[in-house]
Amino acid sequence: MRRRRVWSAALALGALFCGLSGWAYAQTRADADLAYARDRDEVLEAARRHIAVLNTMDGKDVRGSLRAWARAADGTLADELRRTGDDSAEALEQEGTTTRATVTDAAVVALDTRAGTAKVIATVRVEVAERSGKSTTDRKRFEAGLDRKRAGWKLGSLTAVPVGTVGAE
Image (tube, rainbow, N blue to C red; front, side, top):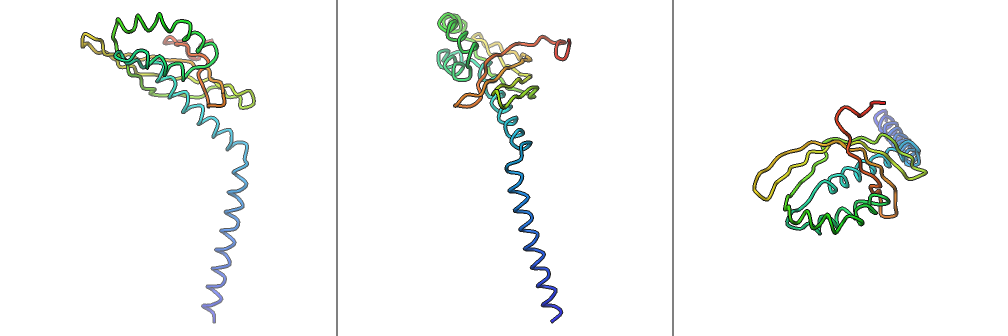
């Protein structure tokens, strides 16, 4: 009899715990802080991907690389890429250099979810392989402006940041 009461009490406590846990989870799904964190993570992932794309060039498929650049960009950056695309393609095809970029670190420094804008800083490692066979590695820093579009976050601006200027006023 005593054992049955203990098991009944344990079952009741377990059911109560499950109920409270479900309620708490349901409350956090609508939490504004959680939604902001999801947006921040989405911006960061898009920025990493797009910055890497805009610093990568396949020397054997320059036009394909430029199309990838256009898909990553929006606004004034996309306008600039379209305006300089043909001239850039010819010069890059003649050069034949291949680059592969990896974003090594990035951070969201500003996010306005209502306006659909964000600013990200990033460090990038670019591996450069020249047609001659010579290869080097370059490190760069960027500040990127992103805009939210129907297709997701796109780069509206990408500016190289010289060493020693981040955080300087």
